[in-house]
Length: 225
Image 1 (tube, rainbow, N blue to C red):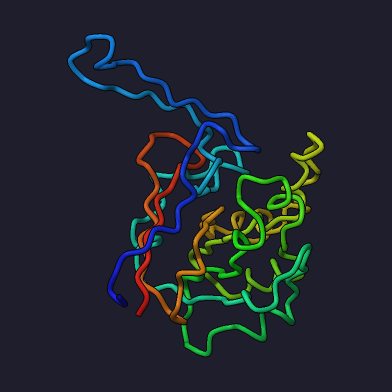
Image 2: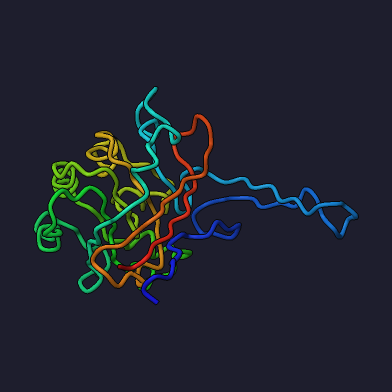
């Protein structure tokens, strides 16, 4: 149904190949407790999440400083599902070929369907990912966007976790350097974008309300139009 809400969130789990998280029972019916009570420990930058500028700039704004209107509303779909392959470089020419014809585009979401190539709980998902080139990040920065959502690990150095390395400087993390540094909100690690069937969608990308944090886990729900 066209009006059905669709979840694009990568669920938080305790058995992910990349991140260590903990979901523990602190209250249990089996142990005679009055309530079941679960405690969660997870990075604010794991699974589907939203970045604030303080993630890369000391003293900058935090997650609760991002206006709600930024991450709720109409998003234009950048559909690359038909061309994506392992280690596909998303160049300015590629972006130009799919850029929406509408005026005043402020919110965009990538549809590469990368999780149909590899499970998001596999090393290949992270190590063979398509990526945004330096030039494409600069291209996107010129578009004066408010928010971009990605369904693939968009900066090439993200795959460095496979070898326990963090590539420096920040300029190599191109979407963070060109976009987040400019104030463009980044939503990372969506899945299930194969369910997107229209060129424009309505979306709710709601970060958990956590004080004084540089990011937050995020629930992403969309409707096709």
